[in-house]
Each structure stands twice: as structure tokens, then as C-alpha cells.
Image (cartoon, rainbow, N blue to C red; front, side, top):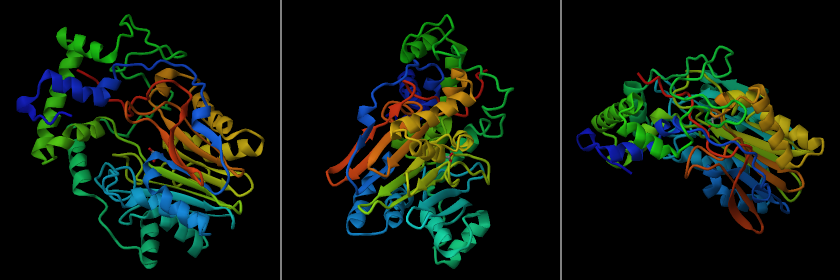
Length: 437
Ligand code: ASP
């Protein structure tokens, strides 16, 4: 990836960087087609089994070993997601999570323990990195289910959780880059669900039903579009060239390492979402689940997404199954995604069908309008009490190399599978990049 400062920034760097970033996404409209192959993203295995979001895959084994030895299902799930929580390089969860718009990291988590049918949750927690365990502690050591903000942190300190600065140097610099170059594209609204919301000018309208471009501009491939735009001096391309040059310059000034600059710019242009989830079924048929996140980058202070909402970010019913979610939190709350999926399974759907139905409810909330749906993404991780599992998502991923995946471990081994997407192609970042002048 390009490590150029502005002095050596050239058209090729621009194309390379743009291909990674929202600038590129703004010029493409993924083709819409219902994905059909569910066989690659679902299966049925004998308990014990654990499933997780892709970013927890590296930590599945230790949780599984504990479950095999008779350890508690929720303890194991919390231990798996502690992996990304402790990892300063995972900037979507725990330590090193990208901060809110004020530069403060705020974490969300919730969990459910099937055998005792209990739940715990924490929202907008500052200064404590292992919020999955904090949610579990609320469940185990309080008469409440949900604590938020300062109260949640104080409860954690009382229970011996160390007070830690969660903003790593890396995340602080990316936040400063956002602040200095891009904070006019914020979360203050209007949101995409607002009836007055208009298609942003930099995203040419697509056919609302098919998602295909309606402009005279042919659906030529995106890099060619971009190249043509540059060669024809399209003001949009010039704008992006100038903008990216400046971002490279500011990134260099902030001391962001050359090899990370392009990725830092991408995070600014397209606020990353992250989150992780783990669901567990042991040999006795006991189930638990947990979801943990730093939420959306540059969010408003105090914003809670779906991850601390029991029934949205996570839901486990000992009699039926467990489901977790990552992606557009606001949309998932409105369909109570994880609970909807578990209820669907209770009424006879397979995990795959149950997840697809929840995704279709999100689609329904937008009347199927692809002008809006292209900005949303959602992934569900689903495990039924009989060992049937599935990973489904609205889109295939955020871009090449960033495909959605589900990790699965059982006695037969450990593997990561691509999710089955409702729509073919990649989602487009939100909020949209600012209007090109
Ligand atoms: N669901 C998370 C939230 O809305 C973000 C994500 O999963 O990417 O906070």
C-alpha cells in the first residue's frame, strides 16, 4: 500500500488509496442478486460447538478447550471475546477501539447465560477494556440487568476492574486525522432512516429496486470510472485527489507511520464498524452468548448501539438457541435482530432461514430501497440447540479482503466460513463522504 507523503503523492497512489476507501465505494453500485448458496455458510455438528465473528476466530480454541473440560458456557464465550478486547490492534473492540467524536473510547456489551436464564449488559463504558466480563459481572453480582456510563465504570472499579486509558496512540492519531480533515461528515444527522433523507450527491442514484446504476454512466468497472474521471478532469476526481493529498500530509504531520497511512485514511473516510460475538453450546445442551464492541467510530458521546441491547446484539434462549449481531446497530435494534432470530427458530425455521428473515425485516424497514440499503450492513451468527449453525449477512462484506465470516469450532476442528449474503456485492460506507464541490 502507498506510503507516500504529499510530495510524492501521484495519480497511481490516488487510485490505490481510493480503491481501499470510501471514495471508491462512492462510484460503484453493487449488483443486486439474492445469494443462493447457503450450504457453505451453515451446517450441523455435534455439541460441544462454539461460533464467533471472524475477529474472535484466533481465540476460539481456548474457549472450546475450557468447555470440553466442563467449564461454564458463558465463561468460555467471555474468554474468547477477551481476545479482541485485549488486542490494541483491533480497533473495533475493547482496548484501542476507535473513540467517539470527542476522542473518548466508549464500550458496549451484553451477555446471556442459558442455564440460569440470566442476562447482563453495560453501555457507553469508559476506562474499562473487558466489558464483556463487566456485563457478566452485572449479571452475577447485581440485581440489575443493565448499567451504563459512569455508573457502569464505577461498578466495575468496585469489582476490581483496572482503570485503563483505552485510547491507544494509534487510535488517538486516527481520531485527530478525522478531526482535522473530515469531522464535517459526522453522525449528527439526519440519519438514513429520516423520511427527508436525500441520496447524497456524491452517490449517483441507483434503481431503488435492483440497486443497479440508472445513470447514463455505464456500469463500467470502478477503477476505470475513476481513471476516466481523472483523465477527463471530472471535478469530483480532482476534489478527491486534493482531499487525499491533504489527508496524507496531515497523517504524516501527526506521525502516523507511512505503512499505516492509507489504512488510517480509510478509517476516516469510512468509519469502521467492528464488534465481536461468541455463542456456545456444551455437551449437556447448555448455551450462552456474548457480544462486545467499541461501537461506531466517531459516534456521539453516550451513543449505545445494538451490542448492549439484549435481544438486538445478542440473545440466548436455553430452549432454542443463541444469536449475535455485528453491523448497523441502529437498524438491528429496530428489528430486535438476535431475539427475532431465536424466535424464528423456536417456530421451526433453520438458523439460515431465521437469519435471512431478520435481514429481510431490515430491508422491509427501508421499503427495499437500494439507495439506502447500500449504506447498511449486518451480520448474524446463529447457533441452534441441536448444533445447527449459520452465518448470514446483508452484503458480502465491506470490500475485497473484508468479507464477513463466521468461525466455528467443534470436535471435528475449527474453521472460518464466509457468510451467505442476502445481496451480492459489498456495502458502501456510512455516513457518506461529504459533498464534492
Ligand atoms: N453493531 C455495532 C454498533 O452499532 C457496530 C458493529 O458491529 O460494527 O455499535
